[in-house]
Structure formats: structure tokens, C-alpha cells
Length: 273
Length: 337
Image 1 (spheres, one colour):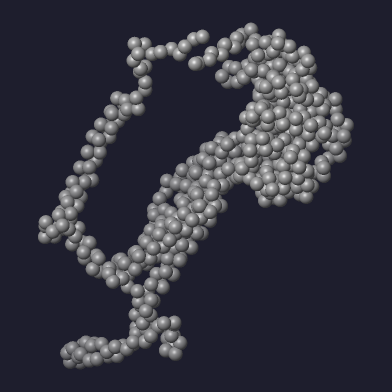
Image 2 (cartoon, rainbow over the protein chains, first blue to last red):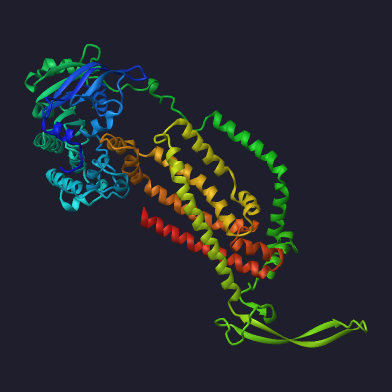
């Protein structure tokens, strides 16, 4: 990795802190009155794979978006490698995180490789951005990452819009990794994929992030995938952490607490003949 | 196991109808307003003339006003003027040995009546006059003017594109640096768009004098307003997901605009720009009428001199050019999008 960074940054990267990402008493309400996050405190250990589980509207996405600075919590603090992500630190903090999106977030008319290199746009000058003339180091890194996620040279030069859903998420993972992040935020990365592809993508996310020493905070709604890939599972319901433990502790009782809290009784599913 | 609830008494629920009392009311009000307006604009007279023309053209009536007017115009216009015939005496530095290509000299004898100042008698005598005849001279001249019109349109479109991009970016809600800037940009854009080219050209000709300069500026200002409005709306309507993805990497607004928004809006920008170019060619011909250069200025001059055969040439050239540009624009649109 030869993207120019300050020596302090490099030292930080080499000496990985124990806590990659920390939420401290984070609360957020929306103007509609919904309390999306309610006093959430959470430490994500370096190089861990943490899965957020919870019903729709439980605050999983809000939590991930606040970590990426895409929304600002009302109260509380979020730190990446010990540094708060607010104000001036935001851009630097974002460079230490990669994000994988539910609907991929790719520019469909750019090529696969251009999409991956776009992840490094914050480290290069505006003229290079304008002409998409990325430095050799970035191009090399993008190619290595694309090869790692299983795409070849032909696919690298195809428009991202022509790829299948699984391939697009592979591109998303490569883009998230290009800045050598401390932590990858994955917001339901496999929600729009079929079960077999979802399994492949989750395995890839876990392995590729693990190799590069990046922690993963991933929201999911497939319990089987959470059990299979997580080191640690966080259950969210109504913006509160209602479960925190290894997959082994995810008993039917725990699942009932996560998905069927006292206020929201899931309606029984009625089959229509 | 529950079953689907059936509607009561086996009759369907009251479903929303696409035509309701309000729609009927609006149609009736519009009809009443239009019938008042028809009287004000003498629609009846127009209909009468059209009817008269229709009857005359199938032979049920001797003549009609429209028929007489059109007939006179057509007989004056056709055949259209293709060649140019210039008296040699009017050409400066004429050199008979170096004629323009395809040109020839023609000498005719003309009867000239001169009033003798001593006797106060008119003397008629024959005088030899030499003309330079260029077989396609006028057509080539008009084509040159048409080229100037196209050049005016291209320059105006170029300035409009360059000027409208910053206006569009600060005038898009998701990229504006400040609401005040947004409001200012949108106001400027509305102002530019509300000023018809023909009217701004009228005043710009006063400021800049006759010629293409005023035309370029008049067209550029109006198209800038048009392009900035639609560019800005495209930026606002762009899918926010790639934009957020780029922002989440720590990139600034410029990178987000370049890498997430521009690829999305480029097809629409191309279509809008081609439309503006196409439209500017037509408008450049029109604003020539007020002296802003190009083929329109020539048209206005010939029209005022009642040289309808030349007007006919100009109209044909404009028509064919617009037709060809239409085809070209359609082709480019297919290629680029």
C-alpha cells in the first residue's frame, strides 16, 4: 500500500488498537418521533467479526450509518481507533473504515475497476479524480483486490451495471478494502442475493477482511448466516442492545428476545390457499 | 386458518374512479374560458378564412383570401434564386483574367434613357453592360450564412454548457454549499430562462451592434438558464446510493460529484445538450431577424426588399439544414446513450 499517509497513520495501522470501533451512549431520534438508537454503547474489537441482528426498524442500519458519519447521532460519541469521528476528523475516520452496502452503491456506468479505485479517491488530487487517472499503486491494489474477490481482467473493464448481484457485491467488498480499513461496516450485504450467493459473499467478506486485519460489523437478517460466520452477535430491538454474545449463546429464547420483544409481537404468518 | 375477507353482499368495494366530479368541473370551466378567449382572438374569422380556402381549393368557390396570398407568394418565390449576377462596375478590383470558379462574364446591351440637360429631351441609347454571372453564387452565399448561423449556435451552446455547470451544481439541493447560494442560483436560472432570445437579442444588438456577437450572447444566456435548470434537476434526482457510498469512503463533494453523480446523469446531459444545440440552430436563424447575424439577417433583408425568390432559397436552406441536423442529433443520441 503506497497511498501517501502520514507516518503517524502508518504507525497506527501497524499497531492495531484493541478496539477498532467504539460507540458510547449513542442515541438518535428521527423527526417522525421514532427512537432509532437508544443509549447504545458498544466496542468492536480489532479483527473481530460482529453481526447485528434485529427486526426491521430495530436500528441496525442507523447504527452502521452513524459509524460511517452518514447520519449524526443526537447524543453520544463514536470513535474509530480511539479518535472521535465528528467534525474535522470525519474524513480521516472514514478513510479508516470501509462500507459495504445493501444495494451495492456502485456507479453502474463506471467500470468495475473504476468503482474499486473510486474508494481511494479521498487520497488523491482533484485533477486525477476528474480524469480518473489513479496512481499506479492504486491501480495495482485495485487489481489485486479484484483478483482476491474472484473477478478477472475482462470483468474489471466491464461496466458495473452489467455484473450479476453477487459479482457487484464482490466489487463492493473490494472497494471497501482499498483503503486498508480498520473496520468494515456492512449494511445487510447479502439482502438482495440468493442463499447460495449470500453464503459465498459472507465467506468472502469474512476471509478477505480477516486476511487484512479489518474488523467487520455486519447487519444481517439471516440467522443461519449470523450463526455460521459471526464471532459475536449483537441483538438490537427498538434501538437497544438486547443480546450480546457468541453464536453459541443464540438460543431460541435469545432469538425470541431479539425478534419478538415485549412490545412487538410478530403477527402469525397466515397462509392464503 | 383464516380466509380472505369477502366484500359484503358480494358487491365490490367502492373503488376510486379515475374520473370524478372535480375532473368534470375542471373540463367545463376550461371549456367556458376557452370559448371566451376564442372570441377575443378572432378565432371565428380564422375559421371562416380556412373554410373559404378549403372550398376554393376543391373548386366550390372562385377565390379565397388565403389562396390569393399564398398563390402570390409561391409564384414570387419559385423558382428560387440560385445564381448571382453582379454588374462588374460594382465589383472592386475586378480582374477579368481571374474569375471565381464556374463563373462567366455576360455582356448585354441595355437601353438607357438619359435626360439631356440642354434640350430637356430624353435620349434613348444602347449601353453595353457586363455582368459577372456565378451559376450557384447566391446558393453558396446563403450556405455561408447558414454556416455562420450554425457557428453562432455552436458557440452559444458551448458557452451555455460551461456557464450552466457551476450554476447547476450550486443550484442542486444535494450539492449546494448554502441555502442562500441555492436560492441565488435558482433565481438567476429562472431569470435567464424567462428572457426570450428574440427580445434579449433585440437589446444586445443595441449594445453590441449588428453581427454574430449579440446573437451568440443572446442564445447563450437563454440556453444557460435552460441547461442549468435541467442539469440541476438531474443532479437532484440522481440515485443517492452510489453518492453515499463514495462519501462513506471519505471523499469530498467533488469526488462524489465526479464518480457517483456524473456517470449517472451523463446520458441525460448528452440528450439535453444535443437538444439545446438543435434548438439553438433554429433560434439562431430566428434572432438574425433582429440583426444578430447569420442567415436570419439575410432573410430579413431580402424579405424587406421584396426579393421573394431569394427568401425562397434561404427558407429551403434552413429547412434542409434543420432536417439534416435532426438526423445527426438522433444518430449521436443513439451512439452516446
